[in-house]
Image 1 (cartoon, helix red, strand yellow):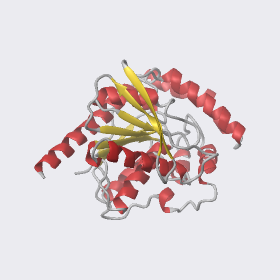
Image 2 (spheres, rainbow, N blue to C red):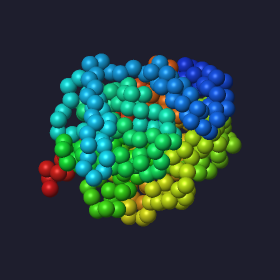
Image 3 (cartoon, rainbow, N blue to C red):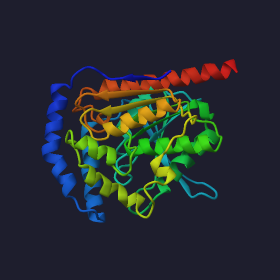
Image 4 (cartoon, rainbow, N blue to C red):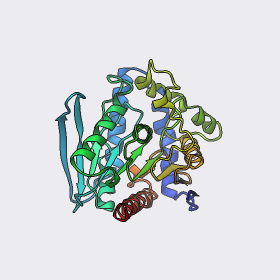
Length: 327
């Protein structure tokens, strides 16, 4: 069964003020930064500072770094994030976002820890290689390496759930499609927050013509992404993600902000998934910005959105467990 859920509550006053302040202060800087290593370095500092200021790890969060050689395929880098008591028979694989070039496991540690606290799952946050130094398909290969390691060393594929935001959502879709097309078991579910779908930003530009994104323009976002995709045709299968009829992906919850340009990507992905048979739910939160779930100190809606995502993942894991026992 598929459904579309639009959260009807209007944006809170605090989130509306945050969006205005972001549009006035952050968007001009993001649009003006040069498409160079210097521009990327400055962007990384701005984003890291903002993520630290706007969110906090859950209480009793423990971090265990992972840096292991993987024979024949480089290294596995990331960290285990555990908030409170966590189960040991299942895991959440988290894929952070921000244009394939800016963020890290550290910037997304607060969001990963909140998901751990709410689901009772250990979260493996993959520290994939970033552009401009590492180009396509380095990040996608690192995410696949992380999933393979989790399912060979820790738990069965049906006991893994997947979550990603922005470019991390794009990487999560890539992982599910690659597994499906290889005839391999899929994760039990995927939570996609403000996922990037259209790497040409055509959908985003169309939405931007109707409403200005508070954070960044489509042109500036595309310049950032091109650090990763340069030299690769935009219609490459692992960038375009054309999902064919009958290619059923894991149950999916998509969340997006009504004020962001990637709301168009979220809607397009939801329509594609439902048309091809995937159980997909879409939530567009009115007035919210890109990955608002990472900003609980500024945006009150972040907390219920993350709770809804956690309930979805926990429910999907429980359903997968029942199906496994019945088989």
